[in-house]
Length: 144
Image (tube, one colour):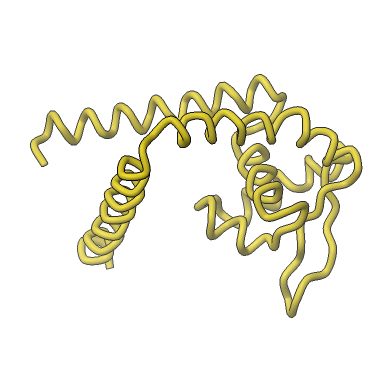
């Protein structure tokens, strides 16, 4: 990829991240807390901390800190999961918060997704996965 095209990709990714950050701020959340709630809602009111880390790329330490704040605010509680896993679960207050803040974000994303043709959706997923896989492979080679 020519440098200018790579720069454009980086710029677009940064702008998208900034938009999600702006949404988090408007919700009164840190980026980490919004990502945690997003995944928990996507999974249906409960999700293991390890799965949240895997799906978001957020470190377990950062997840733990954000969860402690969400617990203090009465949004989530922790429950034992399978084996050593701990589940992050929405409280009643958390469900109400999600209905007001997180699910409308899902709706916005679905509006965008549904405006694309099935071919555009397939291309987006295919190319994004291809980029991720190549980046992972090359990073492992460069920084073993």
